[in-house]
Image 1 (cartoon, rainbow, N blue to C red):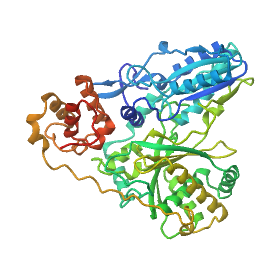
Image 2 (image 1 turned 90 degrees about the horizontal axis):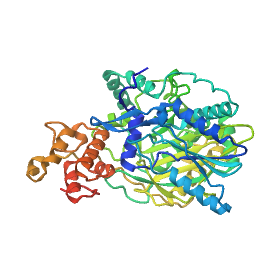
Image 3 (image 1 turned 90 degrees about the vertical axis):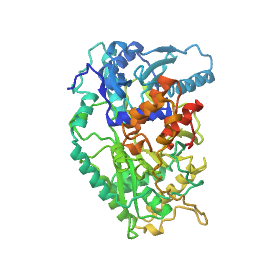
Image 4 (image 1 turned 45 degrees about the vertical axis):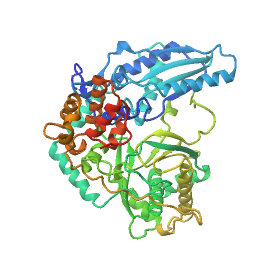
Length: 555
């Protein structure tokens, strides 16, 4: 157990989410949840259960200020927990209630702050005597996807105990997320990190980003927004995929990932590739019943050389997946940073493409036999493709409810694609899935994702950015305000005041802290996303003198 009487360092996953907030403001990494509760509800018992749940799990009442030049986590006491109750029972029509529900969803998705108070927010809303909505606005920095079943089960147990007038059972473990984060940090020595990085460098030698089919040429910057499109896979195909996976003695995830790798190999003309997939990262006994951002992304390297049949692709994919489990590895962010410390790769091969399979964890919430619990949507229709903040080129999120259709969400970068690309990619993926079900031993070269006569244009992968050789600082120091010059020198270290920020050995966290200091001391906000496109003193000077965020570097 570590002491809680001082601010604590952030875990790698907390740093990742903190940086997301610095770049994209109050846009969460995943959606808030509104649970529709229909039936007789004990309102005081539920509000008491929610307060007890937050008191149990420190990550739900942790805030993240910048102290002494670095982001820290500060755990708030339990006496500051509140669960507002709002009564909309007087609304006259279903249309009025629908508008309020949509507004609740919008409000739950926005307004996050990290430094002044814990970002988790809860509320209970009454629409009628037997119709309530529980608002759970829990950003990823407080709880990952695999924390949700823990929260749902504990909330149910706490509610049932309160409704019956008896004390709740104590938690099974006395440790919390901060203890796990300290344990995680202790597992790596500098020598261990260096050896692990050398191993990855050997495994990934020669791997580059994929030249994806694209609607636009790639520019030199980093992607900042993705089109999002969601579809339901045909229910019959979904059941066939589940059954076929069982017959082949592989998980559904392996089957879906093998098909996705086949799609990428055929569409990009490659036979070696890497993608990243979410992992619960809960192999340790310390993680049982733990709530917090434990999950990470595991790198999936696949060699599809030799024109294998799909069953062989499946076996190679299964080996790749099994090779990521049960072994200690660096976090995904540490791998990305370690393999490209100067941030020269655009895009980084380990951050280009993601593939995830997720379940529906809130469906396990059972407050009482008399109450039905469903997830309330913002509207009843399927949303059109819309833009969300994201750096990756391509992300596929599959949701499996155990039965019925698989839900496929595809995100593709607006840097390369129009809004029509999401449906197109999902059509290609659906075509591959149907072909492998019809012919499980089909050769990779025989898989045809695109329709007959459909042409694709590959977006070449740009070369690494050239290093900045000119000592811009030395030539222009007389024109730079001494205050900004001092902040830059403190951030990059003495003797390394020219060139690019990351070529001086700094990190994205250092960049975010530098920009926060500039805004706090001089009132000039500079967007982290813009600075990452051209991380030099020139960028800062241009932004500072203009009083606005730059879109590109000026020399």
